[in-house]
Image: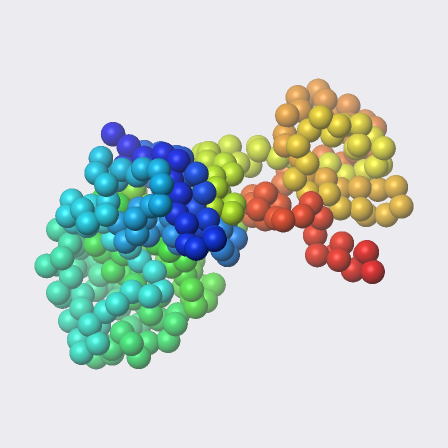
Length: 300
């Protein structure tokens, strides 16, 4: 049984379609990267999945139930984001101690191990933490709860590079020992490649693509060289990104529909063939324009 089934899901706020006719399914036991630019609809989608918002049209099933006001979904799900409300009069360790009352799979040993590792202080209040330390504490709660559906919405806000790396490693190690369905919303795709099972990329509230992460690296190819040769090669191919490099030279990132033989022929004509980094590809796929920021200056 799929953990999440969305069918033509739409959420409208006034004149804005935050989620637009979105359909997808998520199988159990995987780490899904929800990728998209600011304003793409990621948080709205996650709040609908968590049962915080009702869709305007379409349908959604989480654990085979409508998540809105569902006791079953609430009991098997945790939503971690930067706006988590924690008891203001409880110390951090008291919050962790009380969590076992709310989460059936709570692992207090893991929680305290991570708490000590990240140098959090027992007699601190959640509201007094810095942004990075608050994100770290929220992450500890999300991991130790071990809910069948765990949602992290931009969980590394304020964390430095070293802490982010530790978080990703902890997430992967705990997932391997206790598989469950995890959705991780983030802009930092280049840091996530090694832990994701699949990627759901959304643009303007709509699904752009949803595929296993290992297929994303083969989704596009970079071509650089003489403009007329590249123009001929890409005549019937979807172009994601285009950049002039000189009078007659061009770089493009295109949908990879070429055979090995076709790419070898291109190399013999002087075309440089390269892979497209996954984080660059997601930027290209969600961009409003084919070119980059340099084009603004090139036109002036």
